[in-house]
Image (tube, rainbow, N blue to C red):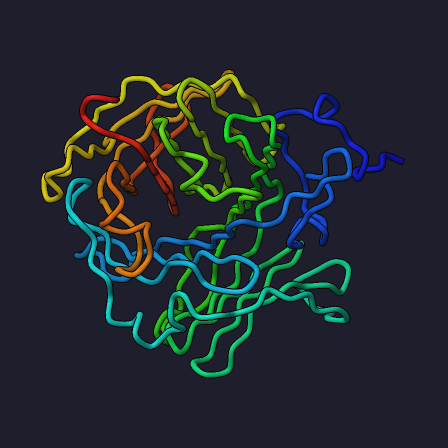
Length: 341
C-alpha cells in the first residue's frame, strides 16, 4: 500500500480526478503530504448560482472560510451585463457575519446520506442559525431562514498538486443542488473548492489568471462538468460527462478571448466576455451574460481589488452549440488589465 506521508513530488501527477475520501475534506488531506510535510487548508469555498426571477439577473451565493472563521461571502444579484457591477442583497444582514469565528470541526458517528464512513466536517452556529456540513457524498448548507441546500456531488472531483500551475494543492467538487431559498423550493448547480498552503490572492499575484468552472445538464438528463484554469502560460483542467472517461490534462489554452473594460471602476480592469478554453481534445466555449466582483463590501475580494472580476453565462463543449436544461458557470480573472491581456 502506498504511504502518502512519504510521497515525493516526482511520483505524482500535476492534476488528477478522484472520488473523495473523508480525509480529503479534512484540514490537511494526506494526499497532499510531500516528504512528510503537510499542506494545511488556506481557504475553502462553497458556491452556487440560481435564477429566482426570470426577469432579473441570477443570484449568486458564496462563502469562503479557513479553519476558524468566514473570510468573505454572501448573497448577491449579478450585474445586468458582464461589465455591470453586482448588488449585495439585504438577506446578507440575516446571515452570520463575515469575519466572525466559526470553527471547522470533525464529527464522528453520524450516519446519513452525507457519508460512507460516519464522519463529517461541519461549521455550526446557533444564532443566527448556520450549518455547513461536508462529507464524501454531500454537503449541507443552512444560512438562517434564507438557504437550506443539499449538494449531491457529481462522481469525480479534481485534485491539483503543488507541482501544478497554481503552485499549491487545490481541490474542486461540483454538485447538483436541491433545497429551499426563502422557503421556496429550488434546484440548480454549484459546488465547492479548496486551496492549501496559500490563498488565491497569493497564488495569482503578479500574473494573469483566467479560468472557468462549468456544469450542465442537457434536456435528456446527461450531466457534464469540469473547469479550465490558466496561470500565465501554464494551466490545468478536467472535463467529465456521463458514460465517458474523465479527461484531465495540463495541456490547456485560452483562445479567441474578448476582453472588455469595467468602466465603472476606471482603473484599467478588464473582464473576458467570450473565450474558448482548450483542454486536451476538448474545447469549452463560454459567453458571459452577467458580471460581479466579490460578495460583500468587507473582504478584499470586493470592489477594492484591482484587476479582478467575475462573470456568469452560457457554455458548451465541442464545435456545435447546444442548450442545457440546467447550467452553471463561474468565470474569474485576476491581474487582468488592458495592457496585460
